[in-house]
Image (cartoon, rainbow, N blue to C red; front, side):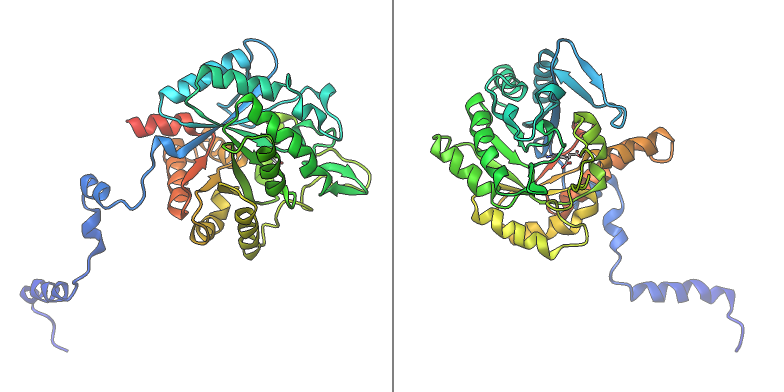
Length: 347
Ligand code: PBG
């Protein structure tokens, strides 16, 4: 083969480029263009801020496995909710750390009108009535066993538990909660909660169901925050695998979705988020209802820990993780990064 004359080379290259009609890089050329063609956006009102309440005054307690996140006593909680609202957040999801002496196997403290949860609800509604206030409805913070259900007959008893929730739900609604978030994965809990609310005339109080909640190791730091880790006991495992879903299963999420829709849930949640993007996308395609996803404590802790070591850029990592959850199809995202993302969206 004769050697190519140097002068021919540019012509050769030009010829090839004429046949390349499609150059996706053209749309990535400048920041302005990238913004124009971005398919997914984050907005301050997309986020739900989880809140941890504790007894006491002027308590702002650090949670070692959730650096930068705190438990607040009610006086400080009101200020925290005001701050969130003022920064653009429109929804909070309330959890309480219950005094160990008030725990039992039936969860009776869960519907005490003067309980920490009920006082926290009143306190938040008084401080910021416009904030959409959601509450966790499950027995684990109240359970001496750290289980989400009543332990009897050698296991976590399904049918006894929604019965307890039907006392707990209306007591949250009476205190002023706008929406209840049943998180225990007992069968039939959404229907029994809806029934109990309606029977007490709380027809406007909504239900955001934890529809597809997996038995995940990523809840560890949260259980530290609420001191709700399952306690070892005879014949009852220290995990929640007999009621939370198996991470191996995706089709099963379709079944839970259909059931929660039929039982009257107003919004459906997938949890955790980052390792379950396929479930978020599938749920989004299956239901017309709003879909929420929960970026859980372990997802937060992973980013924080890697950033502390200097192995990840925290701001970039948290933004990318939230954008991915939104792209998968979540309309709303519960995340411990609410303050950070609101600040970054302002910038
Ligand atoms: C319990 C509940 C859990 C979370 C929310 N509600 C933990 C569990 O199921 O053991 C986890 C939230 C998180 O990890 O951020 N009803």
